[in-house]
Amino acid sequence: MDPLNRTWTPSFLLAGFAAPRTLRPLAFLGTLCIYVLTLAGNLFVIVLVRADAALSTPMYFFLSVLSFLELWYVSTTAPTLLHTWLHGRSPVPAAACFIQLYVFHSLGMTECYLLGVMALDRYLAICRPLHYHALMSRKVRFWLVGASWGAGFSAALVPAGLTASLPFCWKEVAHYFCDLAPLMRLACVDTGWHARVHGAVIGVATGCNFVLILGLYGGILRAVLKLPSAASRAKAFSTCSSHMTVVALFYASAFTVYVGPPESRSKGTDSHIALVYALLTPFLNPIIYTLRNKEVQEAVRRVTQRIRALLEGP
Image 1 (tube, helix red, strand yellow):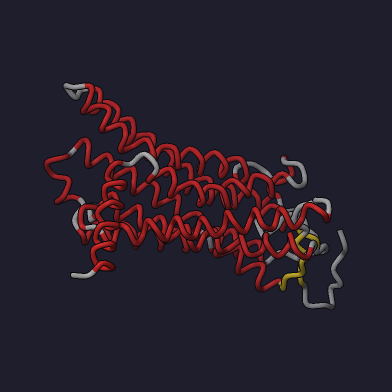
Image 2 (tube, one colour; image 1 turned 30 degrees about the vertical axis):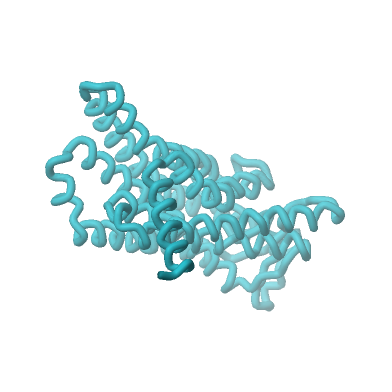
């Protein structure tokens, strides 16, 4: 890594991935395809939920909010990855680097809270069916979504602000975007205290939500096992399986990267794990939620018929 000149306004170099020059165009095209498909898949979910009245339920409302969040989440890092595939080590101004760090973590923590809200929605739908629509009214839904966004963008101020205040002696970031651990490795000072604060803030936010989700699904499991027929139990589990899969993908990668000191992981490990939660998870989410969902398939059929009827005319 190259040292920074203390009298010079700092900027950083994003190292990206070490790959032969001949493979970079192929990696660029693969990443671009995944990025475009991610945007298309999440936009598809948003438009479908708005277009079909049968999907105007709290569950699909929260799903559309998650898809909206994923559009911004993947767009925070994917363009940077594409740039590094094309140009190799890419310079980025310090201000832009810290803004990317803050926005990425804000959206990530917002998703963490939103997944907890979606688990609460499933718990109320299955365990409190008679009071579900009253408890999940339109006002409550918007309040829960607003609280998730507000809490996510507020909590991310701490790690992003502390990292931006560090003095940096090196400029090459061993990552394809500006993230906490790679930036902290470039500091001139001991970052042990910063790492503990980061771990506490991110760990408490993700850990508490994870415990909440486990508790809610524990209640769901008890309620489902009491249902009289196997068909009703299977239907109840099917409405939760997609969400549980997304939660497992999100938390497994998040805990791997953000819980524990940065020095405990080898250089370059963060960037490979980041591909899972920053690129692949937003790509897989709309597929997981729609592929085996009969309500979505029926909604697609109805919307397609309406579009065909409009095109054919009277």
